[in-house]
Length: 380
Image (cartoon, rainbow, N blue to C red; front, top):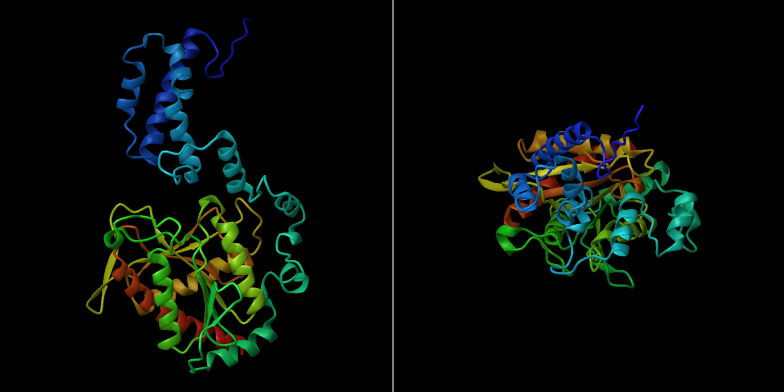
């Protein structure tokens, strides 16, 4: 019996080649339709085969799959980080490899500590001199006695003490026992309708202003103590954003074990049209709650985060019907392994205006206030 090889790009029998070609084009069409509506398959085929011997179908798979344009398109579907790069600056193979490994494993090939930490998990959360507060208690709220004491004193505080800053000048805090921690992993995200761009690279964009409004409402309207960081995490290397913001979140939790809710404020990028809802005569950007899972990285308690997100979602629907876009579970971890009440909040999308997102932050503050009241009752 004659041996046949069915690997794409290696010479095979004529019938096998035809079948392969048909399957490949069908797969390309489906992928283009579901992953990138802007991918023009007809134009792509015309560009690559109009001046070639297209009648020899056995060689079509090789030309398609190993073309630079198609390989680049496939990479960007699997690794969106490749899209976010300086205009006109191509990534070297080494940089691509580094970003892929980091995105899938959180291992920085240039930092041996991350490789060791991936095998000895307690080292990931251990800071020098901080063994007890971080490495051994990544879920500070599990210490119910401490949380109850700090939570009670902070919840009833209606004073307005002066803002305190850490030695690096990066963290804005109100009061001694904050109940809410706020930060932005992707600080540069902003709102096109207001700023005309999607990102303000190297700067704090609209999402940081939205986080500031949320903090201000929690403090001034509801008397809730808050700690917020305005530190930039997504520049100069976007792919390191979550690694950097993880350090900020860990420091918040270590310094303030009273924190009951940890919020990472973003805005959505994947909507073709803006989503708004009219509440009390004003347009508000809709809010989506994102929960990470254990699909890619260890996150044994991710369902606690999901349960808490559902509590927030339910309260939001009760108070402001239409404001919430629901709870979405995704494969990333998003630093939510650090706390059972850590939630990624997408306030509006790139299509919304800053004003619509700010109003949503004001409404969301009211939701957090109500959720915190219920939490305090349970803790007490």
